[in-house]
Image 1 (spheres, protein in one colour):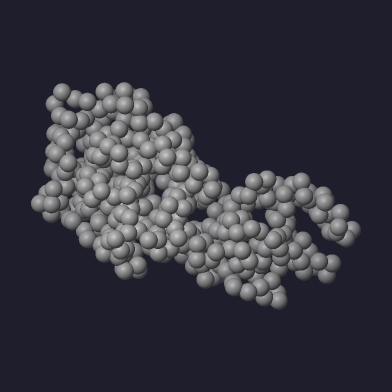
Image 2 (cartoon, rainbow, N blue to C red):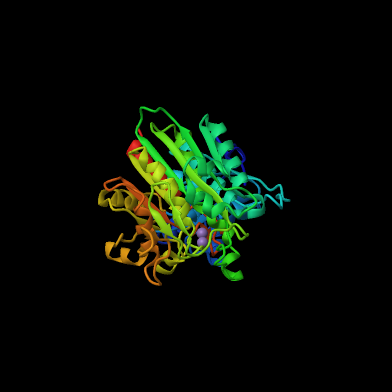
Length: 462
Ligand code: MN
Ligand code: MN
């Protein structure tokens, strides 16, 4: 990833080249005012100003005079994401007079276009291009969103061998240190002593001990905002082991944790007037002689008993303890994110996280935040009748739903650990781009980050 400092410059230098964004319908009008040479060049190369389409316009003496960029009808930040990789090294500025929100979008798109996971293969090329901050942009806002996205993506992309529970806790502690937050980590048998039995049960078979990461920041007098993220650093499925194809991507099973750490970075960088708490159960769902078994019954932190119908439904178990702790503090807003179910992906595909909340007002706020931030979510119901599927004669709950509606039954399971009336939303996300597009390469993705950031700034911003 490139640092923001290398991607932007404050002032437009003399050698800076203009980038002109044009919608398809605007192209012919713009061309009318151009000289014959330009008209001819644009027509020769067949530039149509399709969204994201790029054209380098030469001057008559063969210098790069201007860059044309096709724009979508509605502003799309990712129109600007292909530029960084394709433009020759140098300085650029945007010629359009953009309003504040499209300016931030263009700058963020430009920055995200530079993202690459390079931990094991540092960038060979030194090609650098920089963009003058658009006049109406908010550099601090763009920077924190960019950094948060890169943080979440890097955490997800790092393979489990280097991103186990210890490493994830280290990352949270580094973030806490950066912002003067407090991070406490409850490790191994301490989980039993401090009553986090489900987190311990799921993670105890791994050689890297299970833990609960507990970060707090901000003034205790401010409204309490609590973020909970599923941190399953690798999910083998446990004794109900996954087949190879399903296990392959399971380094991303801490995508909810990565998202919430990214969001915490946004909250703390922006200095939002909240008392922030981030709770991350960090475990590896592994296989060993001491692994938890199908039909074991766990007594959770809240006291509810759970029969383990399936050891691969581990996410809801570790979240149960974390949510119970979060809920006990009576937060103003409780958000959790998890790569929880394949069923959510069957329903909505890879790029649309599922949103669950009993609170219609919060749902509306979140959905409109998603539209504002160009980071959509889709609400699915907490359909109470399906609770039958997570019942068992043996315990209060069964962690395995039926074959249908699995995202809903998982969400209903979580709801059992949250008080009635709590302002709570649960996000079931893929956390992974399955197709590569400019600014969104194949790999870890912080879906819903911009939506949540927008919600929080609307709700708590000054
Ligand atoms: Mn699983
Ligand atoms: Mn999982």
